[in-house]
Image 1 (spheres, rainbow, N blue to C red):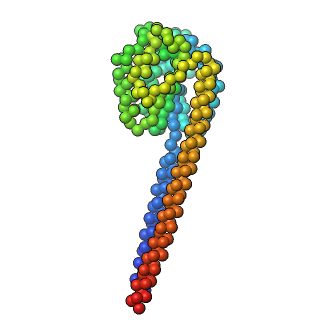
Image 2: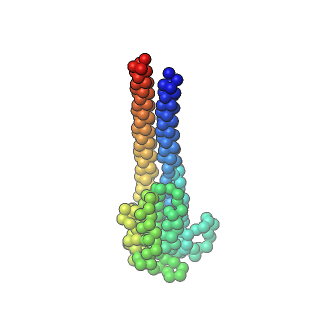
Image 3: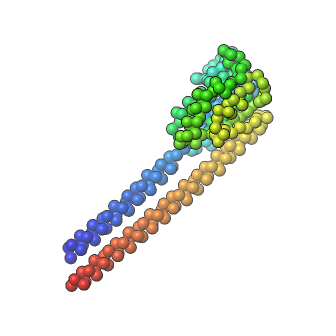
Amino acid sequence: MSKTINIIRFFIIACVVVFCSVLKINAQTDCQRQKETVDYVWAVDVSGGSNIYLTDVQQAIDSFYVKASQYGNLSVIRYASSVMCDSTVTDDEFYKHSDQRAMLDAVCKAIENSKKKVVRVFILSDFCNDTPQNGATRLLTDSLLTIRQKFMTMKSGDKNVKLIMLILPPSTSPVGYSLDSIKAIIPDDMYQQFTVNSSDSLQSFIVRETDSLDYQLNCVEEDNKSWIESKTGCVVLISIFLIIAIVVVCYVLYMKKRKAA
């Protein structure tokens, strides 16, 4: 009799251990999914005439920031003659240039430093390259091969990266216009663009992006809900199986004892 009871106890303990392990794995996985967020990077060209758009779209950008910060992080890169390290540049000469190469370097660094799997980069510029050293000179694709290699490495990695070019007028200017060269070094599935014909169109685009974030957030919540429900269903099924197994073992042991008697 005691031997039978010990076997039953051992089996029950084993079942409880398996059940608790399943619950622990589910809890850990749920936790990991809930912590997954997105990094948003804005690279804003503040040189020359680009500044006239910033006041008009600031409210829309702020709205985007509020929405994005609900489940992600947002950082801003501002550049003209170089990438701004602070917000107190008062030298007029600084704003007379637009170093697109410096912007690309800063964007790559921001993506590489991101610890998130999903990164979205919005670049607002007319993409006319103009540096203090070389003046208004178009960037050549061959001069961007090291940056291209960085993007290819990102593509082959585990990050989901997209760069959205917000093209300000004059997008067809031949003087220093470098968007074609920039586009050539970015993998097709990482590249998007939107031509800004007016400040209103840029606002509309940002509003659509904000609505898209709403939609994505709702989808993520629904997906997580469905995923959690499915996992809960698995736990219930495992519990039922364990109960049935315990009953069967007890019955078998009982029948053996009865026959032995």
